[in-house]
Image (tube, rainbow, N blue to C red; front, side, top):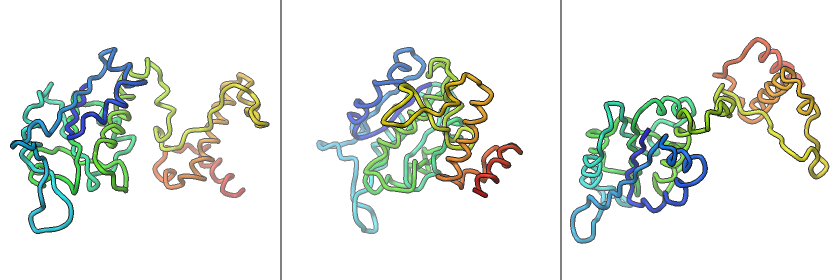
Length: 242
């Protein structure tokens, strides 16, 4: 899979993309991340990529020309490519969307800045607008890294053939159960004894209950859409009574 990220600050990505899971996946050829500097496609001596908004108002708006030319320079790998604009007004990015995006061959991601980009780019070039949350960032670069990371770990082989992503929070609509590792005792706190028994069925049952308990306490809104079994509902009813 290939990610093409359009930004006026490509240097930002050098502190994240080469490391850990993303770095190893790129070395293995499982994914490729290409950075395109929008400023390279700006005209004039100063390579200006923004200007004052028509109609007045605070801040600056990214000019359509440099973004359009930058997009035109991107080589399309196949018909399975998607152009994404990162914007506070976009759909909220969630785990099910990460799975959906992982099926594409190429994601072309535009990092907005300032007060946003000229609306004509949206109508001419954008397939989808996404936001990573209901808050404002200085630019789309952090959001681009979040989406690249979340989508990449769903690509077969990126996690080394592991199925660990299937147990992550949000995969089945619930928060993940508590995790423990060595030592058994730390600062007077012990690992739950059941996890030391090797009884896999009981451990799975404990983990499911703890997952339900944590979701009920911290994100009860998730339970409305979660895939709950009759046993799950019974556990939740007992937890609510307590």
